[in-house]
Length: 246
Image 1 (cartoon, rainbow, N blue to C red):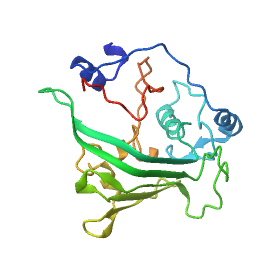
Image 2: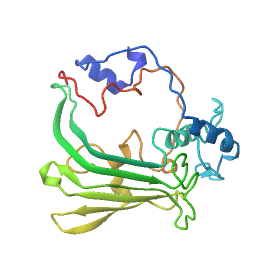
Image 3: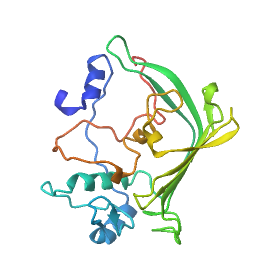
């Protein structure tokens, strides 16, 4: 089991976290995503800086990865950034999120329960289903995406807090982000450095949402190798249903 899971998940399993292993199921690309990859992937490249993504329109940027490519790591991350799970427009309402402790002196526990009223995201590129597609033009501001999360409904001490942000195609231009604080009745601009800070009394930072939610070109990426892992894509419960042992 140790070689098939991440170190963090191994730690949880050894302390009683239940893991149901089922037969592997194939992940099928949506037809629109497959066609966009076939149409546009040949023109996609990394910029002279070795970081930025150039001439991307839609689909998977780099479908033919080679293990000896010195730029393999960042190409993998650009593929991660432009996967097919959430393209075009994302709208989620009334969903839960929990944060808590994982420590060697006791079981995992939920410390704070969040109820979030509305999350929405608008992609300006990579659009497959909703017009305008595959890009939203004109785009004079150079947006990659815009998103908002508001208001928070629970817990009470952060009720009404909201967050909006803009991300740009030019990675040298930092995200614009604002936080509304109802207790102060004011809007506060967030610096890029604060994306790595814990928010709302939880341990998770904004850049860690979804695995990695920062700009790909902001980080140094290193390819360590390839191995088989147990992973979950087809969840049995959505939204998540916590096991009674957790």
